Structure formats: structure tokens, C-alpha cells
Image (cartoon, rainbow, N blue to C red; front, side, top):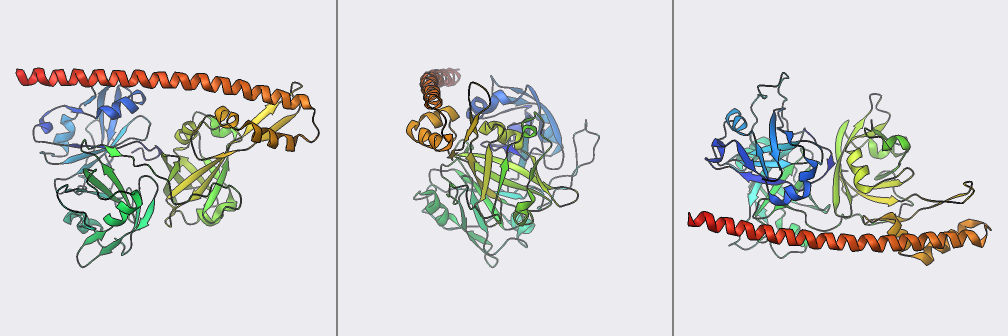
Length: 445
């Protein structure tokens, strides 16, 4: 299963009995409009046990075709839920939530076209999930009772004080009572999110990773994940003086820019942090409101740790160039969530091609480099003058001209983006009108 790359909004499909008789499955319009261009017409839906289902994707209709075999192989009768997960690559992951609202025990099977053996599904390899539905008619409660199958599967390893991690990177401490089998975390969750209660949401997805961390995601009434805004608890934007036991830095090299990157090594100077990670581990990386999931793996000699999966999506998503420095600061005691601080590498070359000046600027927001530098001309020139060491005033004039040109280009592109947004809103309104007319027509038949 793809488990590293861009972290996209997940969605859930509730299966009725009649759904399990059909070969097609619809997927949310918002998901299609946002990520449909990344998916090919033929792809695979992958289950944790290694089962790979070939399906056809029709972006215009918003559906996947080829599920009838899947329903039969997993003996789905209706009442189950399918949790779909996408990491910006080629395929979709799916987790099966039983009618008891807990992840099922997966059968030891693969698709009939596969020649490999099924995988053994364990708690330590991918965690375990359950769903809790919000009751809009009741007041806010703090405790929830996980489904019995989840407690039977995970109760013996579930910690007394679990670390609750939200999708927006915020982390807080919950509690678990072995006597009552209940988890206390909802009031703290509302406080962290800044909401009075959970009524704006339809359901919560809890994922226990087996080593003390419970990830919580919220879904709306359309069963689509809500990426709640916010920032991680680590907010220091400085790249100086970071604790090596809880942070590391990577300077983007030419070989890191290849279309297929064979791994990005983490320097041994950060071995204190790397020693806290498992041989094969996953970390969630946050930049602004965007998340990636990176696979971190120790090399065979166990002397060096490398980012083994998800780097290409992370690199392309941030638009990194050679020389850019990424500083990863840990924001959780479990070393599972990191906030990224960027030190952009910006070069200005003289006419003779000999003198090169490098300027670094930190930023947490995903912005265009040119706009970032053009936004504060005076500060940029002050920093430039300090590093010129007696270069002629002509150099400063050239830099000012470059910034002016960048500013003009930035204004042009901002206008184009605004116009495209207006067109997209107009098309969306037209679609809603057509959908309403179609529903009226069907009701009148």
C-alpha cells in the first residue's frame, strides 16, 4: 500500500445491501475535482492484506468500476464502511470498517490475478481503526467507548495516557480507563480546535498506531475528511540553535532532484533523534496547512537513516531547488509529527558570471519565491548591501531592477489566479443547478 507522499483528504463510503450487488462505486465530487487529474483511467484499490483490485476510473462521472469481485471476495453484505486513502500517486488504499464500527480482521486472500501470497495484517504495521459517530442531539461528552472488537484487538497495548494527534498537527494528552474501556479526549479536542462542541462534524476516525499515539480525523455529513486549520504546537521559525535530539536539517542536493530519488540521507550528526525511530518508521511532515507522510528507514549497517518514501511528492509540493535547506522540528513526544521550516536558496549572478550572492529567507507559508523577496524590497537591499563587501552601486541598481520586474510579474499572475477562481465558482454554480434539475426530473418520473 502507498503510505508516503502528499496527505490528501480521505473519504468514506457506507455500503448498503444493494451497493454490494453493483460493480460501480461513486466517489465524492470534491475529491474528483481536486485530485482527479492525478489519477489514471486504470488503477488499483489496495487492501492491507496485499489484495490489489484493478478498477477503471471515470473522472467525468466520478466513479470507480470493478468492485463486484471485491465485495464477493471479502463477503461484504451491507452495513460496512470503506475508508479510502490517497497519497498523490497512482493507487487508492482502502480500509474495511465493519458494521460494528471497528476495522475488520482481514481474510488471508489476494485477487485471483495475483500470484503472490497475502500479507499478515498486524497492529504494528499500519495501526488499527474505529469510527465514532457524533450525536447532534446530545450535549458534549468527554468520554467515548470504542467498539468491542477494537478493545479485543488493541486493549492490552492501549496506554493509560495516549497522545492524541489531530490532522492539523496539534497534539494533546488523553486518558484511557481499563476498568470502563473508555477514552477521554473530546473536551480537550474541542478546546484545541477552538470549537464549542462536535456538532459541526458527522463522525470521528480514530487510528491507534500500537505505540501510544492515537490519530483523530473528523468527517462531515458527506463522509469526507475535514482538514481543520491550525498549526503544530512547535512554532519556532528559527533555524538556528535547534535541538539535534528533536530536529534535523537536509540541504537539497542535485541528486535529490531526480525523477526517482533513491533516498535522502539524514546526517549522522542527528543520530540522537534517528535512534528514537524504528528501523522502518513513518513521520508526518507539516508545512503551512499541507501534510506529507514520509517513510524513514535505517540502512543495512544501521549507521545512517534515510528518507526512503514520499520525498519526491514533498519536494515537488514545496517547489524545492538545489541548495534549499529544510529544517524538520519535532512537535510530539512520539517523534511522529514534524513542522518544516524552509531556508530558501536564492542566487543573483553578475554579468561576468563570476560573482554569486546567496540570500536565505525563512518562511512557513507556501509562497512564490519571487513574491517573497519582492514583498520587502528595503530589507532585501539592506541584507544585500551588508554582504556586498564594497561592490559597486551598479550591482545594487541591477538587483533593484530585478525586484521591480519580479513584482510586476507577480501582480500579473495574481490577476490570472483571481480570474480562474471566478470561472471555477461559475462552473460549480452551473453544476449545482444541473444536479438540481436532474433530481427534479427523476422525482417526476
